Length: 48
Image (cartoon, rainbow, N blue to C red; front, side, top):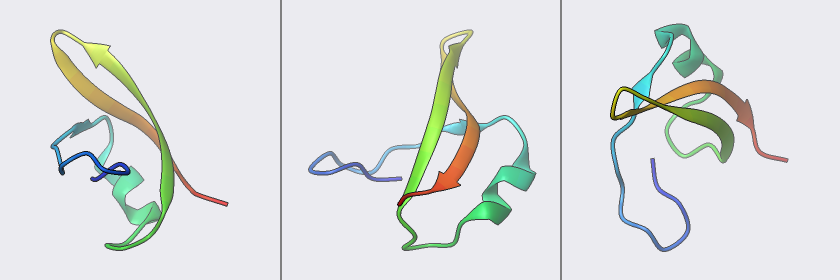
């Protein structure tokens, strides 16, 4: 994932089915939580 002028970074995904909501190049909004030192994506939605 990339965000504005930040370099790409990796995140863990709570459920791999969330990845079906977007494809490479889509603008998305996501919710992430810090769990045990990792950042975990818990929801993905298309950006409007």
